[in-house]
Image (cartoon, rainbow, N blue to C red):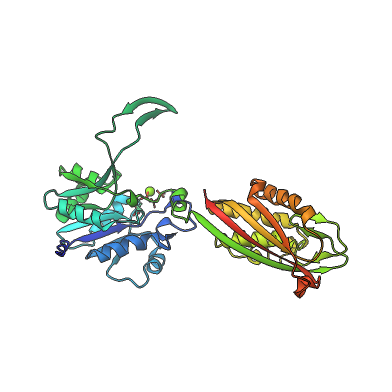
Length: 380
Ligand code: CTP
Ligand code: MG
């Protein structure tokens, strides 16, 4: 077997100086976690592994610490403050590079960069001063005027353009210098074309899709997640018994935080566990007076909302209540209906089971009631 020849040497720029406003992440999207790592780190690792030297990263004003955290343990890159537009960020990064033969210019917002695309791009530079990865347009195209179709565009000749884009260094440097500063360029290929140079198309890759909206981050989430929850509360006289979201007539009730509904608490912990969202104590601290005596319904609806915000819905919940008394069977369907109602799911998604512990242990002696729950969530 023959070794593949090494790639020709190349410099690289990664632009990461945007604000990432549309992605709705808690921090600028280039620093948000995607598939286990900060978005920016993915491209930087791939470009360094492909031999990019030098590698210049345009970062937001004040973003140096966030960048160094995101890239901890890596070296071989230089940081530069970006500008107000993407084009200005590229121009500032280009100014940091004294000389190079070839350069790749890449958006940090496209973290999944197949090495094959880099090979195609550098190959095309043997013939053309610029090269870009493109994909066909598969949908038909409609021109919108005030919400009404006012025409259509033929799609055969149209291509969707990705990054990285590859250039002979001097050609793109000169083109950026000649570019009118008040014009915003969508990408660097447009800047090179404006300078009268030719840009070749090479095959892009759907995996190179740009992370733009919150949904783009959600699509990277695992399709199924599972969480488990467990809780115990003490039985004592003079308390109401709330279990599975309903009130049950009994000679004792559960004592503890809120209404001490162990069954709902176990479900809340299962839901929080499935989204990696901490536990019931971290969301509703017993020390906070607003939750004292609160109905556990509120905990469950809140957990349901967090599940929704995390990009999931409840597939099913399996709850087991562990006690000698009261008998759960007569209340099973009322509990299922209540839990299903609170979570806005079909009753068929909720299972309520009960068992005793043969008079052994704390539940066997009637000192308390325990509950455990498993929740399965499905990606929206
Ligand atoms: N970018 C940049 N400098 C700017 C604007 C954008 O370096 N002044 C970078 C972004 O960090 C991103 C890439 O250009 O890697 C593509 O831009 P886009 O997807 O629009 O990212 P943002 O501008 O950060 O996001 P938004 O438009 O949603 O605020
Ligand atoms: Mg932008």
